[in-house]
Amino acid sequence: MADLYDPNRNEPDTPPPGGGPRPDPEPVTLPSPAGPADEGARSGPPPAEPQPVPDAVPQGLPERVPTAGPDADRIRIGLWGAPRSGKTTYLAALPLAAMQHQRHHDGGWHISGMTDEANAYLSQGMDLLTRQRAFPEATMGVREIAWSVQGPRIKRKLRPGRRPNFVLDIQDAAGEVYGDGHPQQAQLVSLLARSHGLIYLFDPLGDAQKATESFNFLHSALTLLTAQVRNRGGLVDGRLPHHVSVCVAKFDHPGIFQPAAEAGWVTQDQGGAQLPRIPEERGEKFFQWMCDDFRGATARLVRDALQTYFDPRRIAYYATSAVGFRLAPQHVFDYRDYVQEIESGGRKYLRTSPGPINVLEPLIDLEDRIHREANRRGGKLW
Image 1 (cartoon, rainbow, N blue to C red):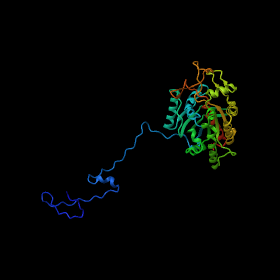
Image 2 (tube, one colour):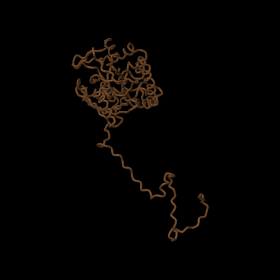
Image 3 (cartoon, helix red, strand yellow):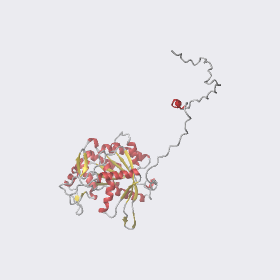
Image 4 (cartoon, helix red, strand yellow):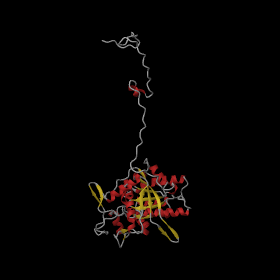
């Protein structure tokens, strides 16, 4: 058995093969500060000089800085609603509604993204609704989207006309985020506090279900929102300063449309597609009826909360449908067969091409109201 190595034992000098003098000992290389990971490099050649890592080169043309103007000049619109109230579908339908606006009005509206991500959001939503005729998936978490919006020149009596041109900052958030104690609620409330206008989607069908009762997701966020705006001195006569468009969502659904028609709220166009609608001047009374007679209970609390926390003079009301009604082959409305939504393979689809109703109008109205108030304030939004 071989002797164990003893580092303290004196070994006799052994001449190297060939009988020549012993070479000078090799210099000792100290370990690098990196520790054991560099152990194998001691006996090999010296490490090569580190080379710089090349930058990742983005594909396509260079992207310019968005020309939206100073942040103080941007009109910010918040989108608000309980879970499954249709916020994501509303956003997907917005560019389609802008394209279709010129069918019945002078001039059209144009919406484009301020970033590649915003443009992709627009394109994907349009593809889902028009080509696939499918509904977008519900939003997860909070997503900020910036869109550039340009409208036709607005004619004014005794004043020069103006062409709306603004940036729409939208916070697309899952309805659950508005609930009390949600970890992202504070983030969402901060985004809403920075907004100048709010689009509030009220879903009468979802409000009938305990898990999606509108008031549960409205009041908690309202109290936090009021505290933030109050702390920065932004309340106006004790109320929030925002302009609000309240949209009664899913107007096309038979569970909403048929009771409204039978109660006498619906009128029908005489020309074109002969679409049914709630006249603009009856929007507020229709919402009151929806809360008092149709839904009741928590819906009345929603109405009371909106009119308590916001100035009622800054609230407008609409009956909204992101996808519209199914039209007959003659491209007109048929009360016998108007339901647009069908289900196949566990997923919901559209029977015909969508025709959004009162999707763009709440936004146009918000911009106009905010613009007029800014003029009264000497050009300051607030």
